[in-house]
Length: 64
Ligand SMILES: [Zn+2]
Image (cartoon, rainbow, N blue to C red; front, side):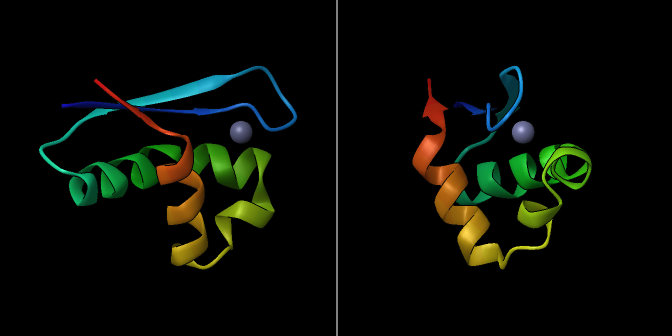
């Protein structure tokens, strides 16, 4: 399955796309892929508890 998470908080939309077999795998991959972006553009999000980041990502991603 392909998971796409688009971050558009305060900037041009930026998409992170990963291939994963399930939600847990997809979440881990997206968090890894988005980490540099979060640290650069959203230091507050980069430092939020994993549970909070999980809610934001899983609430906004699309699966196809
Ligand atoms: Zn962003």
